[in-house]
Image 1 (cartoon, one colour):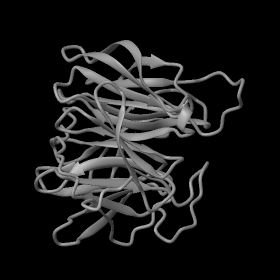
Image 2 (image 1 turned 135 degrees about the horizontal axis):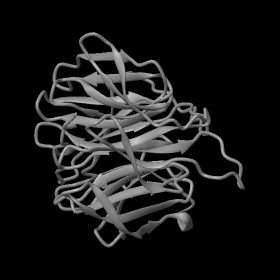
Image 3 (image 1 turned 30 degrees about the vertical axis):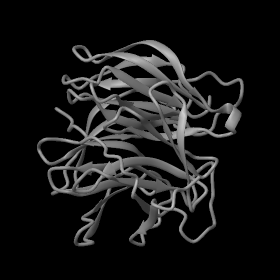
Length: 296
């Protein structure tokens, strides 16, 4: 349900095919997000309304801002570095999957600056073997496989102390929690955090607020859910479009929840006028955490 104190507003007029990966840059007070299938990074100054788009050469699953002002991207074939000044995309760590039906998808940077991203199958038969998994980007230009048997990677995020890692497989309608070694960047002790099959929905993009609660876009039900640390849904917000995709806290006080959405992706299509738009949820009375930058 939606509280009367909560306000949901569409921001601007952009219409993403598959909006994803919102990131609030606390240093510049700007919001970044992507149109995954449109091959675009979008940047918005919410105060002035100035909005710019940056083209990338293939579908983009996620991004992490870097200390040098650029970004690390998860593209079709692996990790690439992007320069916002020149528009140049340069390979950094290619995965060598050699399967056009599999690409890197959602990713997030841990509290120590390591970028983790997982793969997804664009189309997968029921009995088809799962290829790929969750990878950690390494300083030497390689990528280490951390978790395998993942059909659709989504919603990676970290507890406030960085010692719990959350990660979802949308195909399996499940969010897992792991113990996370902050020294090595290794997840262990996989367990079910939330099984959403009874709700008939899949978890998509996610974030963790300053109180340690997880927020997830429940893509098939048109809702945003807040989970307590035990995996119980404590808040559900009805959304004006059917397919919200990802969430991130932003704003000067980190108390605005930005939400991306789908107009037409490989699997979903929404014909309502605001589908594919960027939204802001205000009045939650909850703050998020500043996202770390990629250390590479």
